[in-house]
Length: 377
Image (tube, rainbow, N blue to C red):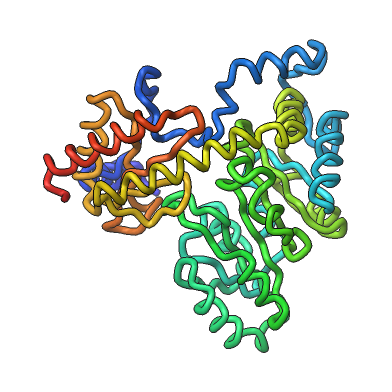
């Protein structure tokens, strides 16, 4: 691609209010855009406990190697065994949720496969679908009946079908009916992949675990960069699939492994998850309070979770609203296409466990007032 064309494309993004920049946000802003849902990443007492539990030798800042050379150090092997102990299936640690999702799909599926994916699945899932070369069909968001229609129509034509869904969706804050999707496996022959990026931690070990559906899921992906307060991802699957990934997944084979200190923290969080139950319960109270407050204020959202999406529609109005809120001391990030469909630009508001009800209520009242000022309600 010529440089002139790149410049033109960037200008078009600016004109359409879709141009992205990297910036550091003022730490004094009240943050309604954090994915640290349980507040673990900034819990000083928890961090102190972590540092007191281990000697300095455990805090190595680089693995300096891929897992297949010298990067399978003791900590990451302990972590994988602990995940297997909890979930009852083998685990392979990936460096990120993006790598885990895309790698799974592009490693196991090919031009002879059919992939049926929720229309609003994450970009990492779509990247894997495209890289696989498989036929891709999208069903309407959360519409299990639409999914079944596709399975009924195509199940006889393909021996190799993958269905992909998330549990909690990061842009709308709504939830898939995982049990209903699992029930379809009894009638139709397909593999099922589930991404728990926004439910791990918020629901303890995750919705799939809580619903006792782990055995029904062929590929369970648990990214750790949200309520997990870290980085990396667990891929939970049968041993034969784990071994195939170790031998065939390019993103696993050719990537330097995560530093030991990261996986030591991942192990620490996993081992302490049961101790966060009070925090999780209080957080769910905040979610219920927030959704109730929105209803009282007549502010519409599709959300049923800790991620609250306020759809504005127009890019410029959404950016203006976000900037106005920033001037008033709130960080509420504007989300635009291609992250969300065209004309559905929105504020993505995420709750965290360390918030107070009075602060949340004040923010929503401020949000409504600012929406009135720019004429979007």
